[in-house]
Image (cartoon, rainbow over all chains, first blue to last red; front, side):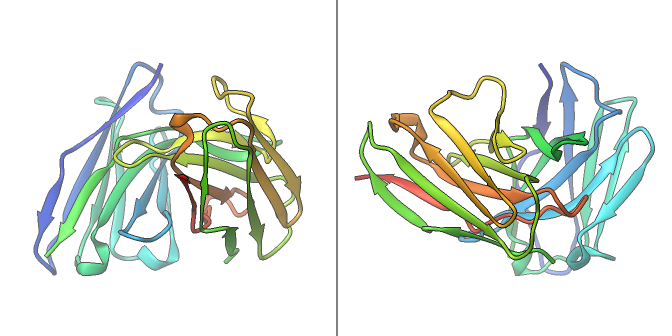
Length: 121
Length: 108
């Protein structure tokens, strides 16, 4: 059973950057896309972006374009999300999730990391 | 972008109750709709995908229905572990998948 383990909480200054890791264990990593989703206090989840680790193909939500970079190291089964130019609105819990795709249902996220709290202050 | 609206935003119920949560999309998304449960401090959990298909291991008291723009998640006979926040998410626009604002199910 695949499990996603994320790096620990971060406290950052405005204007700085943060890099969150998401390590997969117990299953195949590189063939499934990994999505990143964040949830700010009092708000619903927001999709940040997605990477296909085996191909390095990335897609980003428009609101994060130019500020976020998703990468993956297939040798260590680890995905990374780097967010730059942080501001207080980036304070949130950031989750990675494995994506399952299919013709009949499009896609869903079936395995999630436990989340990484990023506080910008 | 496709907007997802959930209602109610919160509800109070007792163990054993039946509750229904509604999710509405701003455009026709066929059956490309997923439901997740989220307990505080835990990872979100997939309940239903494709509007009505139960994820493996999810109890049958959870039922998803709908297509087009209107969807429902029904929980029959609420259990203590079901008190959480529920989110719908459209998977029509790939890979961007917008979420609803959530419905918090609280103990009455």
